Image 1 (cartoon, rainbow, N blue to C red):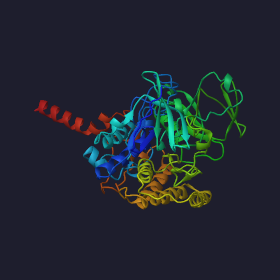
Image 2 (image 1 turned 90 degrees about the horizontal axis):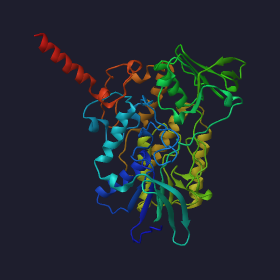
Image 3 (image 1 turned 90 degrees about the vertical axis):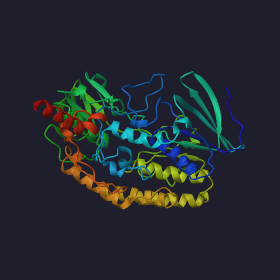
Length: 469
């Protein structure tokens, strides 16, 4: 069925209603509140709710309508970086929670914060849920994108036209799954981090984790916290290198299996109950034709994107959140505001050659980076560049960069206690509260426990005291 709409108003299609897609919707809403005329905007989300990775589902493999599961979220996940480093500059944690909270909230609390900003507006009205993009064609004559969608709920296929297309589908959902000789005979569970849904099943087990990424680090620590007998992390090129507690260790790369025995590059062997591949994700855009498909590995500045956003061969095709990330929510905002201004003719696009020169300059700087502090400085410079191009509310990027470096030091010092540290908001100046329970002792990640435990204990003490009297 063809469902093309005839209108003189520009139309913007957004694929994905995770943090990046919601940032784009919020950017248009902010322009609308400022009295500006905005295009017609429609967002398409294949899940049944917004939030992208932060929208937890117990499902693995395929979802309710047979689509591959998008989310890689798991139980007991807590922010692995200070919330002060991702705070929206137009919607503070203070405004949302009405009180100071700790610097490292659990997933349900961050999900609540993400929703709080967009619930203030009728942004949900712009989103078609349970709808997936199947194919994109760009018509050179009409200069419009023709996008084929499937409404999964009613099993209906239709096509719509857009002047601009924003790809906000993320890049942490298509697993990169390596092969090791003998793995098919391994008798225990083998899975990718994408399908990890919590550490509970690994209590009293010996776990092998392949990888040295943030997910390897966090899943390893989660398994340790929730009672795994031992955790071994196997790295390809270099170890994570933090001061691991007893029960967690790093070894060189796995070479092969013999039944449940793993053999490593240094000649050592060990038996394991389960294997978790924390081996990264692929940038995958099956709905885009080859000439528009962003082909890149996970890095701080993907090639072919002007300002890390506009596809250089066709700037009307916009990618959000495709970088490796230190900054997250506020970076997506900065990108979305710049993209919005281009789509509303408030930003002049340089020539293709000039764009290429700018891209190459960033790529050259990226190649010179040597360590994590360099990475932080590079992405901080990128954020400042974006902020100079739009009216997104400014925030102290340099101070956020300092916090990121403190966070990196804290993790090196003690991987089990860094989440107990506190930081000051650059948006409000509020110092975070110390959480009522140390992270290693906190087994409940619910919003209710996180926000109201102290009040509950005080109320209980008051009741007990009255009864005693």
